[in-house]
Image (cartoon, rainbow, N blue to C red):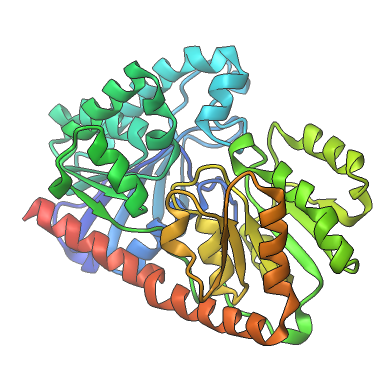
Amino acid sequence: MAIFAKNKREGYDMRVCLVTTAFPRWPGDGDGAFVGELARALTRHGIRVRVVAAHSPGLPVYGKIGDIEIVRPRYWWPERLEMLRREVGGLPVVWRKYPLARVQILSFFLMHAFVTARYAQSCDVVHAQWTLSAGAACLGRWVHRCPVLVTVYGSDILQVPRHPIGAWLTWLVLSCCDRITAVSHALQKRVVQLGVSPERVLVVPIGVDVTKFLPADDVHRENLILFVGSLIERKGVRYLLEAMPQILSVFPEYRLVIAGDGPEIISLKQRAVELGISRQVDFVGFQSQDNVRVLMQRARVVVLPSLEEGMGAVLVEAMACGTPVVASRVDGIQDVVTEEVGVLVSPANPMELAEGIRTVLFDPIRWREYSYNARLRAVKYYNWDIIVQRFIQIYQSLVG
């Protein structure tokens, strides 16, 4: 296996080990897509990147996507029984659904820590994604001796600390890290509430590739309302379904497209039948990033009715496509959605959600203003090339 050189030949000024539980399994895969985009953005800026990621059955232990080295250590035998990446909703979903997953967490964590300790030795910084990977990175620091930065995204701060033991473990891991970035001000506040010093927590949002997520011509727009995400309870998709009869009473020509998969899919399909809207709702399943982009370019509005949300990366992708958004007024979503780009509504409120969607769809002139401002905001604040420069500054401060 290739080992990073200790000098700066080939133009690389810094070597970063990304440690993560979610990472694309192949080019274009949507699993951990934003971590994959971060890795690609870093390589575009001359940073040499190695990734330690969670293994999934059938994947090689070592491989490359472009210039990015990826190590995926196995953590259970036989391989086909590995559970932790079985559901697209992430670790909180498999933890609740599969008893075996609760047993596998420990072996996964220890393998994650061992491999990080080994392969981060030739790096300058370890950048962990989510607190579980941060714990593994900190455990292995006596070997790799690198500073550890952790980025928190949502479930690791919004859900795990609800239990006293989870809160203590989260505080312990964050306290061991040299620096913390949160993807929204809401998450930053939650981290500080756990007892972490405010000056150690910076806000750096998830970015978007504005050269890939682009607006389509108006003639390509269709009468589509789009949801993209995991079909889990906290995404609030059932409230979107319950809002659809009111929307269809005004806009009968529209359809709802639900792109995603998860444990709620059967109950959501049944709810669509009960509401009498099953013919106007398309469940298209888990989609590649390319397909998601096309759907966003075709849609008139993207809706994220979450009950909680660290940031809502799908909103930034929609905005980059010039697609107005309607989302719940919760957590990090409030950083992303302003009144110039869409509408915020109360969570778990189908009537208010329907009214917000109707507001976006009703006035063509307002729709164009939303569309223009959404693209402008995505390019100005969420362009990966801007976001990655902030990370590079943090890396430099840690190794300086």
